[in-house]
Image 1 (cartoon, one colour):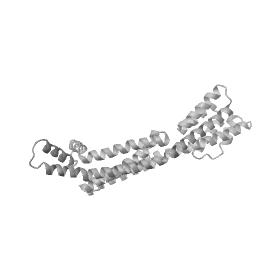
Image 2: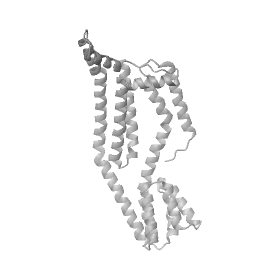
Image 3: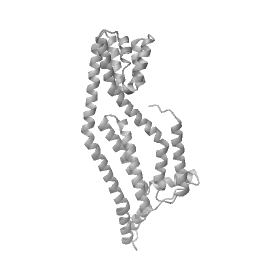
Image 4: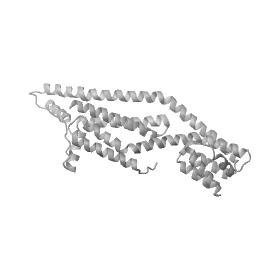
Length: 305
């Protein structure tokens, strides 16, 4: 899907930049510093996120209305109309998101464009894989000498069956979807307990047990202490920032936050693949889970500081 940059996208960027500036000015040493960074980023690309979800909904509506369009077209052809006149006849019906494409299809018929070409243009402009496959089948069958009425009717039944299979899969996976979200929330809870309670407790115990002891135990304590220490980001230069960011990644806070985000990313992609059969559909789940993980873990780290 190609995104077109509009005024609302620029407004989103401006709001994100404003939140980022406020964050650095007033919350640099506060609990909300890191969470506000993700708020700023979310505001900056929120309009693109909305466009993605709107397009996903539109594609589902196109798939839902396409069989209705083809059924009406088959009925018009069976009544004795040529395929061109049948398209013009059914173009007056409301097909929701598919209506502009059907109207354009009828206009091209009136301009005496070849049927094969306008059908191909129709399929390409919808940018829907199901419709493109169906139209390609119709064109190939008709060029091979098949009866276009029978071909259209068969294609309609095929699209309806595909839709039924998708709905059945989605309904069967719905409970698992809810369970996966609950499991991820429990996973975040376990991460917080380990990060805020268990790791500091182990470090404290090692420190107490290694007092006056040299060798492996003291080295292990030093390593644990180094991992637990807070890393201050250096914004004075690019090199300083990269160096401090690398140190943060190897600290306990960086490791736990990255683990949570990586888990959220792949868990969301898997959920999308299972629920809708398309890994792209998992992007929305990944975004939701990653945002949740970033907020929860970063806030917990701020509370530990």
